[in-house]
Image 1: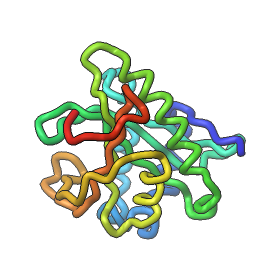
Image 2: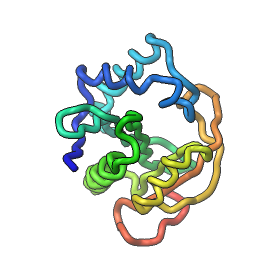
Image 3: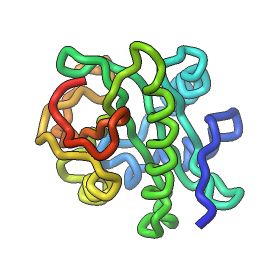
Image 4: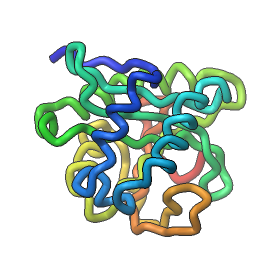
Length: 179
């Protein structure tokens, strides 16, 4: 399967609109207005310049079929990397998300080698999102348990999520709570 990650670009705005549906966003508060969607797109374009992470379009061959990201954030008093993803419905269940997640882990492991970089990558899928929770397990994350997670950041809106963690500095070592 020819799955690869491409840094977010102007051409990915159409993909973002295709993701912005009730079905695709049911676990994260539903679709956003065009204004919020455009603001999100601008944040994604600007993210690499911050040095805090990167949003990627997931390509299957030459077609954009999803998105995946990592970025730094504070969590429980620690700096961590956080990830999240979307795969368009016609491409779900084909291993696209697993391949994209594995590619992202390689990128995050390289980023984590920099001084002061977080040593763990967390994912916070809704407790009700069985496919995303299964993906975390397939990728080798350890389930730390359910938590209340603010999404979108700064909104004050909490969602019930699972906190999944993987050590990106020492792969294969047991995960532990913390940075």
